[in-house]
Length: 267
Image 1 (cartoon, rainbow, N blue to C red):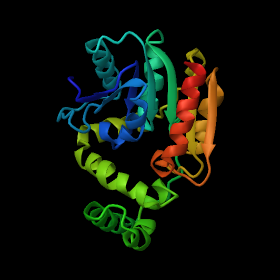
Image 2 (cartoon, rainbow, N blue to C red; image 1 turned 135 degrees about the horizontal axis):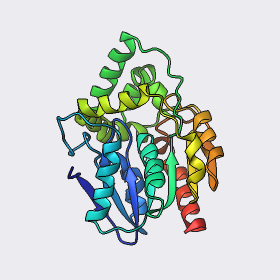
Image 3 (cartoon, one colour; image 1 turned 120 degrees about the horizontal axis):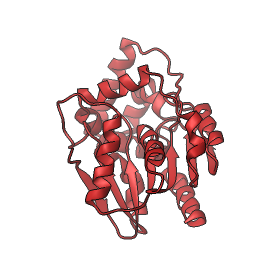
Image 4 (tube, rainbow, N blue to C red; image 1 turned 90 degrees about the vertical axis):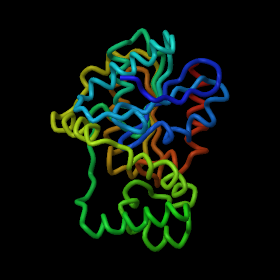
Protein backbone atom coordinates (compact mmCIF):
# COMPACT_ATOMS: atom_id res chain seq x y z
CA UNK A 1 0.00 0.00 0.00
CA UNK A 2 1.21 3.53 -0.82
CA UNK A 3 1.45 5.27 2.54
CA UNK A 4 0.95 8.98 3.04
CA UNK A 5 4.20 10.27 4.56
CA UNK A 6 5.69 13.50 5.92
CA UNK A 7 9.44 13.84 5.31
CA UNK A 8 11.34 16.73 6.91
CA UNK A 9 14.91 17.85 7.46
CA UNK A 10 18.25 16.53 6.32
CA UNK A 11 20.62 14.00 7.83
CA UNK A 12 20.56 10.39 8.94
CA UNK A 13 17.07 8.91 8.41
CA UNK A 14 14.77 8.57 11.42
CA UNK A 15 11.52 6.67 10.92
CA UNK A 16 8.78 7.92 13.30
CA UNK A 17 5.83 5.59 13.90
CA UNK A 18 2.61 6.73 15.55
CA UNK A 19 0.28 4.82 17.83
CA UNK A 20 -3.41 3.93 17.80
CA UNK A 21 -5.43 5.96 17.12
CA UNK A 22 -2.92 8.28 15.54
CA UNK A 23 -1.32 9.61 12.38
CA UNK A 24 1.86 11.29 11.20
CA UNK A 25 0.78 14.65 12.64
CA UNK A 26 0.81 13.16 16.15
CA UNK A 27 4.57 12.71 15.77
CA UNK A 28 5.20 16.43 15.23
CA UNK A 29 6.16 16.73 18.89
CA UNK A 30 9.30 14.79 17.86
CA UNK A 31 9.81 15.73 14.22
CA UNK A 32 9.62 19.50 14.75
CA UNK A 33 12.84 19.33 16.78
CA UNK A 34 14.61 16.21 15.52
CA UNK A 35 14.33 17.22 11.86
CA UNK A 36 16.99 19.85 12.56
CA UNK A 37 19.59 17.06 12.67
CA UNK A 38 17.86 14.11 11.02
CA UNK A 39 15.67 13.32 8.05
CA UNK A 40 12.44 12.47 9.84
CA UNK A 41 10.04 10.14 8.05
CA UNK A 42 6.57 10.05 9.60
CA UNK A 43 4.04 7.91 7.71
CA UNK A 44 0.34 7.47 8.28
CA UNK A 45 0.15 3.73 8.88
CA UNK A 46 -2.29 1.70 6.81
CA UNK A 47 -5.84 2.56 7.83
CA UNK A 48 -4.80 5.73 9.67
CA UNK A 49 -4.73 9.38 8.66
CA UNK A 50 -4.60 9.76 4.89
CA UNK A 51 -3.42 6.17 4.27
CA UNK A 52 -7.01 5.15 3.76
CA UNK A 53 -8.33 1.65 3.22
CA UNK A 54 -11.66 -0.12 3.52
CA UNK A 55 -10.16 -3.60 3.17
CA UNK A 56 -9.43 -5.82 6.18
CA UNK A 57 -5.75 -6.35 6.97
CA UNK A 58 -3.49 -7.85 9.62
CA UNK A 59 -0.82 -6.20 11.76
CA UNK A 60 1.91 -7.87 9.72
CA UNK A 61 0.80 -5.83 6.71
CA UNK A 62 2.13 -2.70 8.44
CA UNK A 63 5.62 -4.21 8.26
CA UNK A 64 5.36 -4.84 4.54
CA UNK A 65 4.12 -1.26 4.04
CA UNK A 66 7.03 0.17 6.02
CA UNK A 67 9.59 -1.97 4.23
CA UNK A 68 8.20 -0.81 0.89
CA UNK A 69 8.31 2.81 2.08
CA UNK A 70 12.00 2.54 3.01
CA UNK A 71 12.69 0.95 -0.38
CA UNK A 72 10.89 3.78 -2.17
CA UNK A 73 12.95 6.35 -0.27
CA UNK A 74 16.13 4.36 -0.97
CA UNK A 75 16.92 4.04 2.73
CA UNK A 76 19.33 1.21 3.50
CA UNK A 77 19.51 1.82 7.26
CA UNK A 78 17.70 4.05 9.72
CA UNK A 79 16.80 4.74 13.32
CA UNK A 80 13.23 4.11 14.43
CA UNK A 81 11.20 6.01 16.99
CA UNK A 82 7.91 4.34 17.88
CA UNK A 83 5.17 5.45 20.24
CA UNK A 84 2.73 2.86 21.62
CA UNK A 85 1.67 0.70 18.63
CA UNK A 86 4.49 2.36 16.70
CA UNK A 87 6.97 0.99 19.23
CA UNK A 88 5.69 -2.53 18.72
CA UNK A 89 6.11 -2.14 14.97
CA UNK A 90 9.62 -0.74 15.55
CA UNK A 91 10.62 -3.89 17.46
CA UNK A 92 9.06 -6.06 14.77
CA UNK A 93 11.06 -4.25 12.08
CA UNK A 94 14.26 -4.77 14.07
CA UNK A 95 13.51 -8.49 14.33
CA UNK A 96 12.49 -8.84 10.70
CA UNK A 97 15.25 -6.69 9.14
CA UNK A 98 18.07 -6.40 11.69
CA UNK A 99 20.54 -5.09 9.10
CA UNK A 100 18.26 -2.17 8.34
CA UNK A 101 17.55 -0.83 11.84
CA UNK A 102 20.44 0.92 13.62
CA UNK A 103 18.68 1.85 16.87
CA UNK A 104 15.30 1.94 18.60
CA UNK A 105 13.55 4.63 20.62
CA UNK A 106 10.47 3.08 22.20
CA UNK A 107 7.93 5.26 24.00
CA UNK A 108 4.91 4.04 25.96
CA UNK A 109 5.16 0.57 24.50
CA UNK A 110 6.01 -3.03 25.35
CA UNK A 111 6.84 -6.37 23.76
CA UNK A 112 4.16 -7.90 25.99
CA UNK A 113 1.69 -5.02 26.29
CA UNK A 114 -0.43 -5.01 29.43
CA UNK A 115 -2.83 -2.37 30.68
CA UNK A 116 -4.78 -1.70 33.87
CA UNK A 117 -7.42 0.66 32.50
CA UNK A 118 -10.59 0.72 34.65
CA UNK A 119 -13.97 -0.11 33.07
CA UNK A 120 -15.42 2.71 30.99
CA UNK A 121 -18.87 4.03 31.91
CA UNK A 122 -21.36 5.96 29.80
CA UNK A 123 -20.56 9.00 31.93
CA UNK A 124 -16.89 8.64 30.96
CA UNK A 125 -17.81 8.61 27.28
CA UNK A 126 -20.20 11.54 27.64
CA UNK A 127 -17.73 13.72 29.53
CA UNK A 128 -14.98 12.84 27.05
CA UNK A 129 -17.18 13.84 24.12
CA UNK A 130 -18.06 17.15 25.76
CA UNK A 131 -14.45 17.87 26.74
CA UNK A 132 -13.21 16.99 23.24
CA UNK A 133 -15.74 19.13 21.39
CA UNK A 134 -15.15 22.17 23.58
CA UNK A 135 -11.40 21.63 23.40
CA UNK A 136 -11.57 21.51 19.61
CA UNK A 137 -13.32 24.88 19.54
CA UNK A 138 -11.15 26.42 22.28
CA UNK A 139 -7.92 24.39 22.55
CA UNK A 140 -6.33 24.45 25.99
CA UNK A 141 -9.13 26.45 27.65
CA UNK A 142 -8.47 26.08 31.39
CA UNK A 143 -12.17 26.14 32.32
CA UNK A 144 -12.86 23.16 30.07
CA UNK A 145 -9.83 21.32 31.42
CA UNK A 146 -10.97 21.84 35.02
CA UNK A 147 -14.69 21.26 34.40
CA UNK A 148 -14.75 18.37 31.92
CA UNK A 149 -11.23 17.32 30.90
CA UNK A 150 -10.06 16.06 34.27
CA UNK A 151 -13.32 14.13 34.77
CA UNK A 152 -13.20 12.53 31.31
CA UNK A 153 -11.19 9.60 29.94
CA UNK A 154 -8.36 12.08 29.46
CA UNK A 155 -7.58 11.51 33.14
CA UNK A 156 -6.15 8.11 32.14
CA UNK A 157 -4.22 9.39 29.11
CA UNK A 158 -2.50 12.30 30.87
CA UNK A 159 -1.70 13.24 34.45
CA UNK A 160 -0.50 16.80 33.93
CA UNK A 161 -3.55 18.57 32.53
CA UNK A 162 -1.77 21.52 30.97
CA UNK A 163 -3.09 23.78 28.20
CA UNK A 164 -0.12 22.60 26.11
CA UNK A 165 -1.23 18.97 26.32
CA UNK A 166 -4.84 19.87 25.53
CA UNK A 167 -3.75 21.85 22.48
CA UNK A 168 -2.08 18.69 21.20
CA UNK A 169 -5.25 16.74 21.94
CA UNK A 170 -7.32 19.22 19.94
CA UNK A 171 -5.02 19.73 16.98
CA UNK A 172 -3.51 16.27 16.59
CA UNK A 173 -5.29 13.57 18.61
CA UNK A 174 -8.88 14.54 17.79
CA UNK A 175 -8.44 14.55 13.98
CA UNK A 176 -6.40 11.33 14.17
CA UNK A 177 -9.19 9.63 16.13
CA UNK A 178 -11.75 10.62 13.51
CA UNK A 179 -9.53 9.37 10.67
CA UNK A 180 -8.79 5.95 12.18
CA UNK A 181 -10.53 3.28 10.11
CA UNK A 182 -12.54 0.27 11.20
CA UNK A 183 -10.05 -2.15 9.55
CA UNK A 184 -7.24 -0.58 11.60
CA UNK A 185 -9.21 -1.07 14.81
CA UNK A 186 -10.01 -4.66 13.85
CA UNK A 187 -6.38 -5.47 13.02
CA UNK A 188 -5.23 -4.20 16.43
CA UNK A 189 -8.00 -6.04 18.29
CA UNK A 190 -7.13 -9.27 16.49
CA UNK A 191 -3.49 -9.00 17.53
CA UNK A 192 -4.39 -8.27 21.15
CA UNK A 193 -6.81 -11.20 21.32
CA UNK A 194 -4.04 -13.47 20.05
CA UNK A 195 -1.99 -12.55 23.14
CA UNK A 196 0.89 -10.67 21.56
CA UNK A 197 4.19 -11.45 23.32
CA UNK A 198 7.63 -10.90 21.80
CA UNK A 199 9.67 -11.00 25.01
CA UNK A 200 11.40 -14.32 24.17
CA UNK A 201 12.70 -12.86 20.89
CA UNK A 202 14.11 -9.57 22.17
CA UNK A 203 17.53 -11.04 22.86
CA UNK A 204 18.01 -11.10 19.07
CA UNK A 205 17.87 -7.27 18.94
CA UNK A 206 21.54 -6.38 19.34
CA UNK A 207 21.25 -2.66 18.62
CA UNK A 208 21.05 0.20 21.14
CA UNK A 209 17.53 0.87 22.41
CA UNK A 210 15.94 3.55 24.56
CA UNK A 211 12.72 2.80 26.42
CA UNK A 212 10.73 5.70 27.90
CA UNK A 213 7.41 5.45 29.74
CA UNK A 214 4.99 7.30 31.98
CA UNK A 215 4.71 6.17 35.59
CA UNK A 216 0.89 6.28 35.53
CA UNK A 217 0.29 4.79 32.07
CA UNK A 218 -2.94 2.77 32.21
CA UNK A 219 -2.90 1.68 28.53
CA UNK A 220 0.54 0.06 28.50
CA UNK A 221 1.85 -0.02 32.05
CA UNK A 222 5.26 1.21 33.11
CA UNK A 223 5.91 -2.30 34.43
CA UNK A 224 5.34 -3.74 30.96
CA UNK A 225 7.74 -1.20 29.44
CA UNK A 226 10.35 -1.96 32.09
CA UNK A 227 9.98 -5.67 31.43
CA UNK A 228 10.71 -4.99 27.76
CA UNK A 229 13.83 -3.00 28.66
CA UNK A 230 15.08 -5.86 30.80
CA UNK A 231 14.85 -8.26 27.84
CA UNK A 232 16.62 -5.97 25.36
CA UNK A 233 20.39 -6.59 25.53
CA UNK A 234 21.55 -2.98 25.00
CA UNK A 235 18.79 -0.88 26.50
CA UNK A 236 18.47 2.34 28.45
CA UNK A 237 15.28 2.79 30.48
CA UNK A 238 13.63 5.88 31.98
CA UNK A 239 10.28 6.35 33.69
CA UNK A 240 8.74 9.79 34.08
CA UNK A 241 6.83 10.46 37.32
CA UNK A 242 3.29 11.85 37.30
CA UNK A 243 2.76 11.21 33.60
CA UNK A 244 0.68 8.73 31.60
CA UNK A 245 0.44 7.29 28.07
CA UNK A 246 0.62 10.67 26.34
CA UNK A 247 3.67 11.79 28.34
CA UNK A 248 5.45 13.27 25.27
CA UNK A 249 2.62 15.82 25.14
CA UNK A 250 2.74 16.39 28.90
CA UNK A 251 6.49 17.01 29.24
CA UNK A 252 7.80 17.47 25.67
CA UNK A 253 10.92 19.43 26.62
CA UNK A 254 12.15 16.74 29.02
CA UNK A 255 11.40 13.88 26.63
CA UNK A 256 13.12 15.59 23.70
CA UNK A 257 16.17 16.38 25.84
CA UNK A 258 16.47 12.71 26.76
CA UNK A 259 16.03 11.59 23.16
CA UNK A 260 18.69 13.99 21.93
CA UNK A 261 21.11 13.00 24.70
CA UNK A 262 20.68 9.31 23.88
CA UNK A 263 21.14 9.94 20.18
CA UNK A 264 24.29 11.98 20.75
CA UNK A 265 25.67 9.27 23.06
CA UNK A 266 25.05 6.32 20.74
CA UNK A 267 25.19 7.77 17.22
